[in-house]
Image (cartoon, one colour):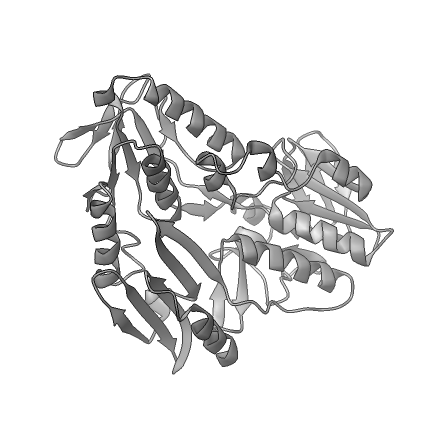
Length: 389
């Protein structure tokens, strides 16, 4: 093996490169990364937004690190084509990079509203976090009655926006497309616990608005509901989910289902071509089916695993997925496979005004759990899921 090309310089791709360099002193490693930044922590972005971490601490690598590791990083560059048969990648700079092994480590793309005026904020990366802080400063300069924000969405990014606005005492309302937070994933009780927490924290909650519309030509003026009512605001945080950007890979002849199809070793059907991170659909033996996971620890672990496989030590993924966040201090943990549609049985094992625990079973085995408020069982449930696989 002489040349390894990695598409994506996030935590999955950079971890793969770092691990490969440890295992192979002489292999050529090239990372193609669309952003113009060295590796930074998306996990730390919420802390940066709240002023708890300075911007420079968000970055995990420096440009010098890539030089020291003899890893070429092509920043601000896109892959324009992958020639599977002749084994090379064509870049937006016109280069053709041959590869012996190719790691596809691109992240997912946030869903957007489209055609937004100034004042609509997303959290795709550090540049968006910079913009959110700038918009917040502008908001704080307005008269008090105009310092209002709306959050559209009810998932992980929406939680960060709610916490962000609360931290800076900006009045906020969340507009949900379904019955509640994570409406397709949580029980009514779990959704109720979260709704009560939001309302107690001064956050307004509007439900069952599948297509809220931002109002304003040049700057945000409000959000229009299906009734025609316009909720006035000057800043909108959007968290309506994400999707893997997969059309490019399909056009290159790589098999796609819900993600890039790989096995538990992250191998595609094409020898020497691998996929990891948010866009990979792989077999998770702990839950017994193909899954797509998009979180930091999974991506980091997958980077290490695929590097070992490429280096000759074929290694399977052996981590129970875990996502954590909070709503105004209320802890929320997703463990394993929490797809309601694929579960045979869902048991509500904790059901109080301030807490909820749901356990997901398939073929008699525990495959997932959602813990809200009471997270004392987190380690035990994770161990049970791992032992079942």
